[in-house]
Image (cartoon, rainbow, N blue to C red; front, side):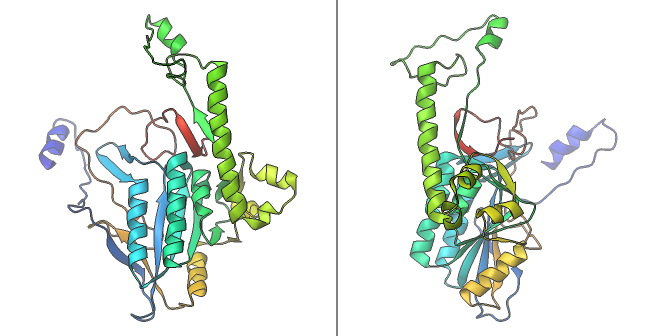
Length: 325
């Protein structure tokens, strides 16, 4: 690898490269980010939920990141199997993701609570929107920073129509299909009214599921007047402060406040704070990134990406719980 970098730099002046050691093993190790008062005081585990929530790896130039569903499942398993872990904190910084991945993570949290009886606290960082908020509904308490972006409750389906563009360069698609609606949503043709109705019915179904989750987990909002509930669920976003006033979150504060809450809830005032990491992935504080991107052999130099999507390419057709400004 160093030889390749040297060759790339030949004749280009004085290039500089940052060579970072990467994990040779993929296991997760526990890392203490705040020591407890004694070895018997227990632990509070911080589990990260960040970036686009998809059952796929984020990737970019010379690196390939984590599969958000996979790393979440792995970290949750560590916390569940360790009797010293008294509670978990979900440190969330995500605009959401696919409907299925968001729902899967939500269901995993419900099973975790049922099987372990360990409290779950969701802590919102920059963004906790749509699918990220959906999974946070499984938490016992939600803490948001005053300036967190919260909400975007709803479903979106994206489709792209390249039919006219292809026609301008003399190209057109021919599709051989088994049924009239087999290619609905295809980027090679316009969406018909019948296809739109089918897609809308699915969007409505997933939206109803989102509202059910919201009503069962957020009693203050569920008891609000119709106008307030409609405002909270029409897809708009709110500041953390406004979200608390509406009942979308329980408290406004910092990650440190979420840790204090977890210690109070578990009556473990001296509990240590831990995270899970890959080997060589040292991080020095509770705000650190617990995962280490893995190098990729095939770097995509030209890549069209959705802003804020953490290395995921422009969204393909599909149903998303996603804040997509």
